[in-house]
Image 1 (tube, rainbow, N blue to C red):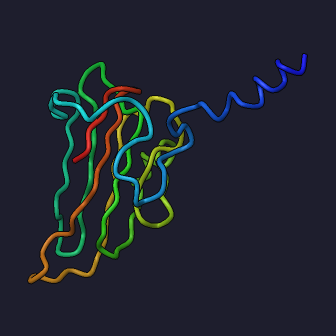
Image 2: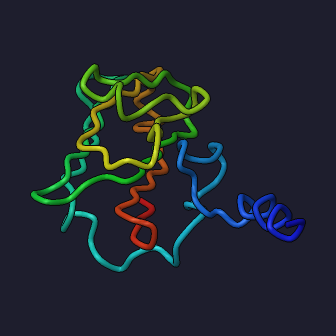
Amino acid sequence: MNRAILFLALVPLGVLGYSTGAPNCEVEQPGHGGNRQTTKLSDFYDFQMLMTTPGKIAVSIVPKDGEHIKGLRITSNTPGVWSLDESSENDFQLLNACGITHIDGKKEKTGQFSFNFDFDAEVGVPDFNVIVVKDFNTWWVL
């Protein structure tokens, strides 16, 4: 009986991954699976980042037929404000004001976001860190 209780108490320590969203903004890869994939992200998703006006970048990720997004995290080292498109509010959330992440481990359908920042022509477009998770062992860092 005592062994069973001890076993159950230790089980959560062995769980890998982040079912309630991505880790903090400094982590550069998911906490599960193997190494990043050598396959192309474009084989599974249409991913776009486009400056629509100076100081505003629109981000879109849409799975191709039969695919899904299990996890996503987008951050930038440039100060700015992230916002979710209304259609993405049930599947994604702001990540401590430094980015966007998935809400849970369910299979999200699409994501549409925007990033507003103070545009400086000399500095140019901000750098982004993007992690896309297809499943436990299949993920990309862009």
